Image (cartoon, rainbow, N blue to C red; front, side, top):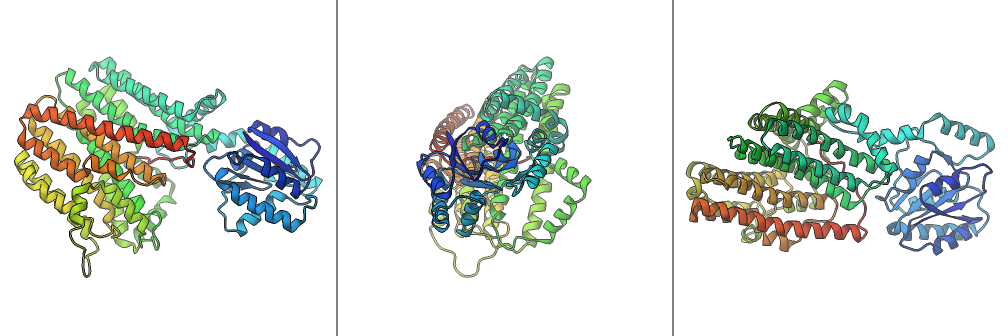
Amino acid sequence: MSTAILTGQPVPGSSIEADLRSLGFDLRTATDAAEAETLLAEVPGDERVALVDARFVGHVHALRLGLTDPRFPLAAIPGAVTAQPAGRQALTRAMARENSAGGGTTVVDSLADRILAALDADGTAVHRPELGSLVAAVPADPQARNEARQAVTDVDDEAVRLKSAVKARDGFFTTYCISPYSRYIARWCARRGLTPNQVTTASLITALIAAACAATGTRGGFVAAGVLLIASFVLDCTDGQLARYSLQYSTLGAWLDATFDRAKEYAYYAGLALGAARGGDDVWALALGAMVLQTCRHVVDFSFNEANHDATANTSPTAALSDKLDSVGWTVWIRRMIVLPIGERWAMIAVLTALTTPRITFFALLIGCAFAATYTTAGRVLRSLTRKAQRTDRAAKALADLTDSGPLAELVSRLRSPRGKILPYTPVLVAAAGAALLLVNTILHGAGGAVITAPFYVVFAGCALMQPLKGPLDWLVPPVFRAAEYCTVLILAVKADVTGALPAAFGLVAAVAYHHYDTVYRIRGDAGAPPAWLVRSIGGHEGRTLLVTVLAALLTASQFNVALTALAVAVALVVLVESIRFWVGAHQGGAPAVHDEGETA
């Protein structure tokens, strides 16, 4: 239960009490600051509390945005201020100081606004939502009140709420082909009490059914799969719009939304590969290649953002040009489309599945994603080389966590400390050299070449961590390691040339990729990286790579297939159990609610 304390002189005919009750608030009334302080102390510390001026005039959605968003400990709009348990102490302290200064006199001006000023004076962070055309005011006289009420009448509260439910920055296909009607689905869900997590789960189930249809290998199954994949994407858009429409944000929901997106897409790849196999066409290598490319592309996005989001002096001519292009309407959509974001990508996959073959679908996907990855990575490299950004220790730690280095690399990194002047690009050059050495020898000499060069890869991986990852291009270190590990598994599975090796490799890479995505979402949610025991227990990227090369060299092809399957199951069990334990525990433990707008890719 949430409690709202109404302060100030009541106004006949005001709808404020009904509006607050409609938002789930239990009402209390205070005649002066002293009584408001007493009522505030009586509200249990684990409940939300709000101070609202009884003379408030405004839209219900303005109150909703200001008083019910679970993401912020303290929030305010004109005439109202609210605190969740995490912000309660700051609110109580400001109230006590205000009451002491005011001497408990009858409230004449807005107590809520005075409390907000006191919070600002303390340097306390208070969220102020963007209201746009919504009205939120405390009129000082009858004329101003009438004008405010007319302004409320002139703006359609529900239309604004529906519009704000749509993500501000989205791809062309999502913006023009999905959001015009998915927002109404979101409202329908809200009015029936459905939660974003339930819609997210429905989207996952729909995508898994689509994958099962694709796995039939029939034309009818492929058509059904394409239709269901689009339906899954509609629900995927709806869950975020429902969260914004009803302000149902949560830590668990953000994780489910982000994780299920990857699970849906990669499960669909597996379904297409199974369907192709039923028709006598083996495309598992293409399916695994698509997953590797897409995952590495995401890691590039994540690493670049983590390296630069809190950097200082973070400007460059390249960034300025990009901002200038964003001011020209048509270039915005072109640039968003050519990176093949999730909407365009899923639409392409769905249409090609229904009309062509899995092989054609995967070839188109690989070509499109390769171009998009080249375009975005090249642009970010140019930005990094032309800017003079000073990266923080937090960013360096985040990049180190994203490398997913295990005990072997940690041991090597401690063997010596770098001395003297260090070249600014050393870590990424060392990582790239180790990855190139491993992959070239694996391609040319198979398991024999891989097992010989894998120990060198371990050494290079450790050397790349001998200094903080604060260089201009050090954000490339995590994606280089991802590419090295995933591609090694892919190449060795192809060279094993035995039935089942590629599906087993697909499962192993999927399990490891889940762990890497989970690491990203923990860091994004300010929860830190996964525990060290987890990373060590699954070996780190260098340990797993070394193990796979040894297995490939020592075992027969059929034995290698079994070993890959067992390794995939073991890694999946460990990372899934720990991930679910962490996120469910964070949700139940009252972790700050978040809403991940998600990457467009």
